[in-house]
Amino acid sequence: MFNILIMDEIFGEEIVHIIPLGFEIDRAVKPFEKLKANRVYILTIVEKGEYPKKFHDRQTYYLHEVERKLKEIDIQTKVIHTDIFDLLDVLGKICNIIRKERARKNIVYVNMSAAGRLTSVGSTLAAMEHDAKAYYVMADRYSKDKNEEMEHGLSICAKVRLKFLENFKLQLPEETGRKILVELLKREKCMSTRDILDFLREGGVSGFEKEYKKLDRGGKANYSMKLNKRIIEKLKNGGYIAVEKRGKYNLIKITEAGKYVAYISGLS
Image (cartoon, rainbow, N blue to C red; front, side):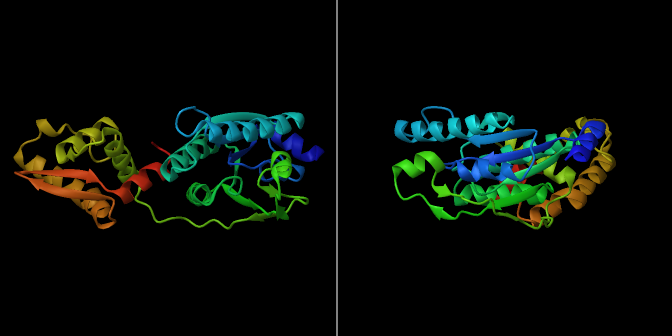
């Protein structure tokens, strides 16, 4: 333990956990009997009005219990409002946190077992795409009554049993394609070929540095062809965009599959 602490101090490396939280306590807290953490992000519903008051009050109770228990063992927590029933919101929030923490050279773990099944799917996909360490906390049994639920959450973990998932890379579009999908998502409307070329130039993307409107007819045709061949056709073939011909213009619209890629990119 002494050597580990010294190495962390030298390299400034921190260990960060992300916990999407439902009605659980043990599954959120028990892992830290074995795992180290400098900081924990708790993703859960904290804003009032989205769901019935009874649900919100119950979720708030579990959040406060988990925060209290982590504070007792000197682990810093940060709560992020997340609709844990919305897969895209879960993906976006987790991926964004992982990217920022990995950019700081920190080690990131994702607890995929402290909320519902839908959240578990989003947590796993996010961890795999961004090379975080996803783990599942095994339950010994489930709470039989209200008192057990208030003490442990829905699951009771007498022993700390963790299952780590093996990561594999998802086959997603390359970075420029992902950036275009995120921009389409932000604008919430179609973009023309000209719009995308301007976006790439403003973003300093290699090969698209020239201003489209200043090119001659041949230059514009070559630019559009390069865009279509390098990026647009690949996104279309992957099912991430739909291309509609309107007069002499192509209008590009993001698909539902493209929205998932935009969120899982962590750039949104």
